[in-house]
Length: 374
Image (cartoon, rainbow, N blue to C red; front, side, top):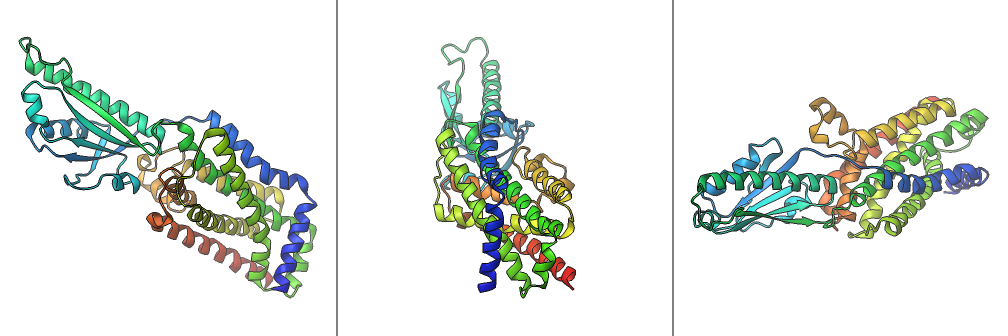
């Protein structure tokens, strides 16, 4: 432990002597949060739909068919009448649930006004708004067909006998910032953690001090832990700044357990710091390390994690690549904890994927360090 402590103290002193890098690591995430949080706006398309048909008549089946035969919705579940619907949204099996009440067909046949309910996952505000627009358009088409069937002699039948009653969960006001902020947290942490670790080790190479560390009585794991612990602390501090800024500026409240959020963040940073070390074993200059870290961490975190583009609409070969992007799993956990109030146990698959990713990239970095020393 004495040797490990010496490496940690050395790294902290080096960070203190480079205040500009420290300002970048801590201040840049908050600045980019403000910039992207106000500037970004996204469009979303495909929707996973669950239908709870409590009426089970020809009329209710016609309504379900109008949704599922459109290009907007894909039927993914048909829960039973007594089944709880919120878990479908919490576990992301569906983005929306259509509930058709009992007596729906009877009311339409009698010329009475009736209503169907749609539950929406508001954690993704853009998708929820799109879903609501699609559903209202389909209900309007159904009303038009009912009016044609009734004919001109319909008497006092209501002009629009079918109503849609939306209920938005997790983000009732459909604020886009509630959707954007968790994505920005994952993106910014990956970017800063990878770059800081990679540049730190490569800086040692350029200055010639890396050779001194290699001949020092240090084990490989002691060198790795000693180089990453300071940046782990800085990344956690950056996380606190981001969350505080999101709370003050955008009103994003953490609804889930703080401990679970901390554990998920540590698992994510474990992989990000390990990936930064792996890049440092390949790069010999800070310029190359910066470029490699920027391309390999920023672009996948933005484009292949579900942050901007939905993974389901990507080609199958590209969807397969997204499984290698840790931000894909971290975003699911973040939105579940921050917006839905769920615990980490609900997302144990995603947490396990983060652990595997961290072990793999750290193992690769260790193997390359050992080989270079040999």
